[in-house]
Image (tube, rainbow, N blue to C red; front, side, top):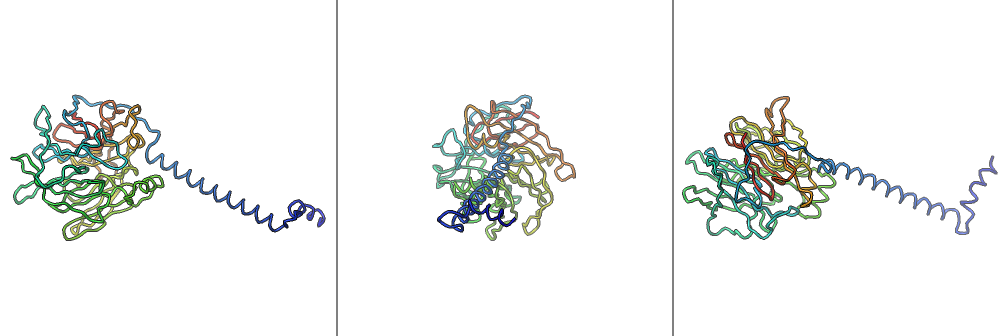
Length: 381
């Protein structure tokens, strides 16, 4: 038995270089192969999860609504919509953002004003007061605040001048049809702001959709599914993180009773419900799962329903292909605080009408749908 055992070692140990050298080399090669295999397996798992988060292979069936019309004059995006109680709607347009397509990359952004009481739906570009740099204006998420003391209206706008993040505070002078610039807010905690919900003339909750500001590292963050995105509370006297753990925190809105904050996680496909406390902190209540890559959020002021515009397939919005257009999906969440919220896809289109829907806002019987870089659509409900 001993002779047979030694004979098995001869082919391995009989080289002039010595048995230990050859065995170490073989073991080193095996270790390298094992490490590479483990890394490839881990990367493969990440890519599978990434394809699920961006809904790589998802297609949708069309769902139509009656009496829909494209809003004339809006051609380069309607990323976010904020509607005042009197039916005046602010619409942000012309977003320039790393990795996002634009039909007019050199055209400055603008804010449209649309009177939803007018059946003709004729938006006008709001003038902005002197002293504000319009050449780098790249409006993203927007939110309004009405001062109860004098009914003055403030419009808070996420801006990306030179691909940075600021929040611009405007006061709306309705009689002059102008936005009077009040202040530019910059802060290290507001490094990748996507959307905001105003709780005062200069106070708001904001979502950072990425942890990294570097374009390449954002792709790493996206592919590897890092949950480092967050929500920040900002006021002139205090700035702090109030929620975290999102793949990509995006839309944000407040309930009609102002007791809860809703946060959309675009690649997490969820809406998180938080209780808002007197000290502005947030505590988690529940999470509602969706299928679409939901974007901005709005709340029906009458019913409290939560509306969102979504991207059926994330790759089509991240990598624009005119031969394979990004679709649009509008979703309503009813009774979000109940044990069984009702999630309904109200409208769906493959890109033939509107491409890359980001938001949906309701006023009376009208549903207004916005897009990242395309048109805006109004339908009857």
